[in-house]
Image 1 (cartoon, rainbow, N blue to C red):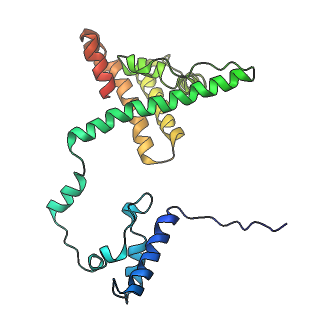
Image 2 (cartoon, rainbow, N blue to C red; image 1 turned 90 degrees about the vertical axis):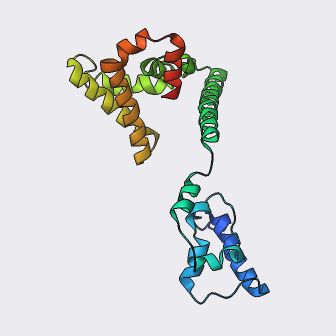
Image 3 (cartoon, helix red, strand yellow; image 1 turned 45 degrees about the vertical axis):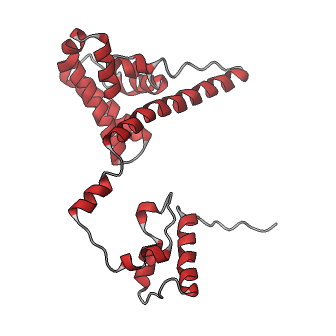
Length: 225
């Protein structure tokens, strides 16, 4: 048998391979000029905005732009406004359902597979989008994660038995760790802190106001949050 080489394929290889071929073919066919600057070629091949998922950029389309680009406030603003606000909100709402159907559906599959082998797993979702407060939401969403952190982190830290300040710090710690559990990056840390701060705010500031709201407004608040 032949030993398999341990070659690590870099991310985006299919895209930058085609772009490198485009440079060679465009120059060979006379559709673009030969670049005398090696770093210009590297810049073209490794343009990061589209390197992972496209679109594939042909060399003759950006040859001149590698040397002469006009950057203005208007163009920059237009670049960040790639979708209109209603479309962006539609995407956010659609993702609200996508992440639930994906995650809850997978949990149901895992529970079913476990049952087929004689295991009984607890439910992981309990209609989270009918919640009216963030605290209620986290009792219903990814229940196994919430209960794990409650049993192994929140309660050992003192839970809600050591005063309001300590309770708030314990909740913040739990959700900071929850963010890190999802991924080691700053956006997940911000995600965890957002929920931690919101839960503390509900407990200390928003509780009475939420109780006085009509149910439909509490529900809308939860979905927006």
